[in-house]
Length: 478
Length: 74
Image (cartoon, rainbow over all chains, first blue to last red; front, side):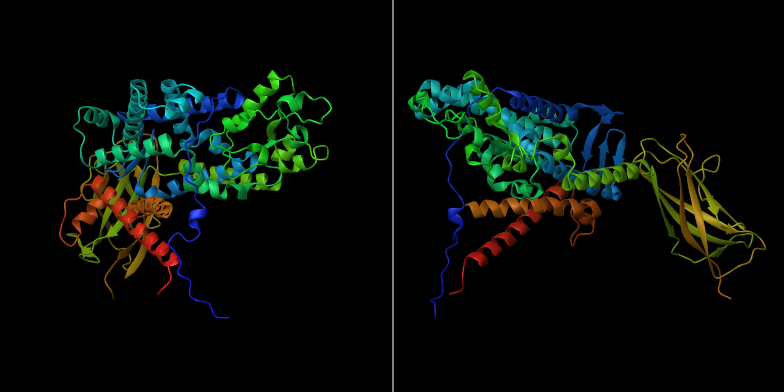
């Protein structure tokens, strides 16, 4: 059967995947999980805005100094050569995310994700200016009176100011805040610093002010794959439909003859939901596990003298058969998936810490002198010249001592030693460029080429770090 | 519009990764010195321009893939 070739339109099928959404007015909630989230928001935002102001040894404690190509984390300074630590850190972050997701679902989304944290802050500002959910909806519906203008202007002003502060603080992790902030507020900031302040400020404003749950639904990669970490024992937010159905309200509820579940169909679980779903339909993709529905339903159950936890944290297996599969610490933690993720997490954490602890405070590169393979000294002794670069990755200035290993008929010395035979001082974070000469003793056997090992040791401070590097000593061919 | 946003967002993430990997190895200042015509490139400019160029290139790539997947010849 022949078919006429299809002319696909650019959005073939894609338009059905995107629903143009109206603003969601999430009702305010009070309860255990909301308190937990408030705590999290204050702690995380507090840390974010305060951290750049902390100093350490004369410099900013947390500074990803891009121009100097060094990342400072309190007493730790990482160079580009330490890139492996960044990758290990990212692996650790990923593994811990998988671990927490396998145990308790999307707790990251509901309590720690920057999108949630900043959106909460923006919602607090919005609520402070425009009032409760009902008041906000009323304000949107009404025409542009002076009051509406004033309220909207105030809200936007607060949002924009907070966004600029956020953008500024973001750049402050890369450019010291004590230079950046005054320059910004005196309108003297220019160039790329200003660009990135405005860029991230705008991103904050857009994401937390307007996009909100659409970031979670459309943009976030974690949202797409998080359910792959779930198994039947993962803690999920679930409506107890055995207990709650059939739901009834009003007159039908008062009718004692009809069968009724505990759900009074107040609809508050839908009103408080930041993504606008109905959890009674079951766990859905959009649900970010904020547990606002749990909080509000418990409040309602208290009011109508019914037991709490009509909506609660449960698991798929528990909901299958509550008597057979009870929820316990054992079912939540002692299962293969959690054990595997947990073990991997522990192993990589240990590896990371061990690697960090055994990280040397300096690095050495030995380059042979390219001018000549060997040369004869004034006393007719065979000599080789080497260029030795020492990178001081520590926090203090250092001097280095040079010696040989594995060879007993030669001596080594810096070309320009300071007193005591050590090298000149190399300041913290700098690279010392030195020259060293290895001299074969008088009467020693001269070969074409032999391996030698240099031992470079730190002299100052009691760190006593030492590095052994191999090279070759060349002589004339016979 | 959603497709545009998707292309831009995914290429933003990839550009971030590309920038980190590339500039951990190559110093923007050195790149400026070794360029075809020597340019004054301070590091912040180097990182910024590098990131934006990666983003632009990866966006073009994404748009091209989307366009070719969503249209047929003729």
